Amino acid sequence: MTTDATSRAIIHLDMDCFYAAIEVRDRPALRGKPVGVGGARDRRGVLTTCNYEARKFGVHSAMPTFMALQRCPNLIVLPTRFDVYRREAAVVREILHRFSPLVEPLSLDEAYLDVTAHPGAPGPLAQVIRDLIFQKTKLTSSAGIGPNKLIAKIASAMRKPNGQLEVAAAEVPGFMQDLPVREIWGIGEKTERRLEELGVKTCGELQRFSRPDLVDLFGKFGSELFDLCRGIDDRPVEPDRPRKSLSTEETFPSDLETLEQCEERLAELYQELMADLAQKETSRRVNKIFVKLKFADFSRTTAERAGLEPSLAGFRALLTEAFARTGKKVRLIGVGVRFAETPAAELQMALL
Image (cartoon, rainbow, N blue to C red):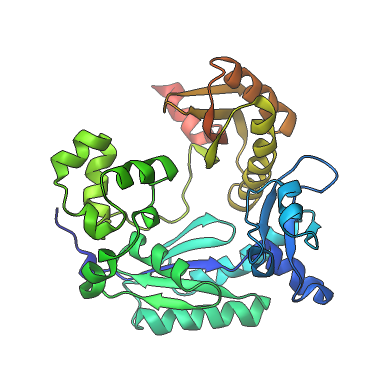
């Protein structure tokens, strides 16, 4: 497979513990203390995120709040304030667009930039961007710079918090050699275990397998693995554009066995979806909502309803419907909305 990676310069920008960092910034008395944002301690809920002081105790995002408090009894759990997070994300987004029109948001706190056409060197450029973000928001960020999305994203994670790492195209083979396979997108806990059974823990070890071998082992994903373990990723940075739908999903470290467990995760996914909806698609009319489940055996089902505004109650009803179809353990939940056609598009269809 060929790639023009040597001519591309991609930055992956990731805000550090974004929601928790905002709460600590706005409440200076919390500085240095373990802070989590998400479900309250007096009801079933999960953390949306937490700061690094909390992570020292083994607390992490998507962890049930009661479990987080067991690990860190002094954890300060605050409710989400998505209106504030959206406002700060808009400030960050405006800064990114100063340097490139090719900005692809992944969430409120994360985005790719293609700065190939910018006259400045990408490493110093990333530092300038991070400095501007801090000047405007008093929030730190991390950046990865590479010849493609895969390398840039992995690099940013290696320098969190408040750092950056640049991997040049010529350095990619060496960079990938000892990289744990779990760092490749799409490899979850089960795939990692299967690779370990094959004696594979690093990308270099995975490179010993041919493309046909990997396709036999993992189907279509095996062909992608052949490229990804070599640091090859030709996906373009795609700016915001009108879309037919908007969704968010999560694959869980351990399969969810009961509807109640699924409902706990649903509440957080709903909050994330509504935040993305408010940030990205403020003028679009929703004409359908849906819930997608992927089960432990990789089968999947989707429940959807037209004519409903997005609400937690509506998504819960769809979750109940989808879960009841099989009763199997759930490895992934997705929630989303589909948008109505624009008036121009509707007129076009009527004339056909």
